[in-house]
Length: 274
Ligand SMILES: Nc1ncnc2c1ncn2[C@@H]1O[C@H](COP(=O)(O)OP(=O)(O)O)[C@@H](O)[C@H]1O
Ligand SMILES: [Mg+2]
Image (cartoon, rainbow, N blue to C red; front, side, top):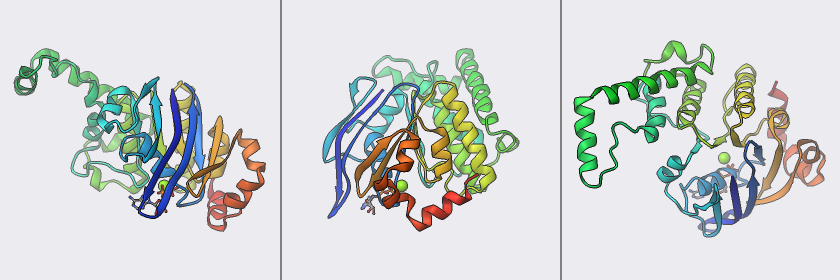
């Protein structure tokens, strides 16, 4: 599903990603762990088209997508979330999720060149039955996606996203990514800033998505969660992969223990995970 080969990215003198190579099979959950500054988020940015790599290539579903625009990738079924959570603050929770589904709209998007955009505008204004039906179906689906998060978001469908707690903003962002019906979901520290209860809930949700067959690339600091969810783990340090393997292999790797598990700050966070 995803083939990353020799990706490199520097910012001035900082080699954020030196040589990233990974393969992800359909239905697999691959986690990327490593200390802060290891280059994990930059790697996500390179894969998802937010940053251009200095070298290397990315293939998604057999197609070369190196340097492709994020909106093109979204159309192909690649969805991601951001480490610090990005939602549209002035839109409601439900509308945030509907934004995620917009690439899938058919009825309001005639494919005719030139007149197409005008038709789209006209259809949005007139709202014939085909358009209303499609909107209603998407709304229903968005509500179902939000229901994955139990009672966290469903009572807040009409609340503006800016009024949500940090954890709920992060849940809304994941719901928006799911509304794309992604083939590949990339999550950048989905439990950052969450307490142990909230982290446990998020772990269950990710586990359910994986059981449903979704392919997932996960950046996560909470090691217990990573160990439970992952089929495979890649460990990054200083922009490069220092280890890769099954959870139990990675846990015993001396290079990993030195670079990551021995890290006092992340060690403390691991204790906090359920
Ligand atoms: N846009 C940027 N400009 C300059 N330096 C950056 C930028 N993005 C990331 N970096 C640097 O690249 C390195 C890797 O960062 P990042 O990918 O965010 O690491 P991680 O997600 O593993 O914590 C860090 O040293 C960071 O300061
Ligand atoms: Mg990061």
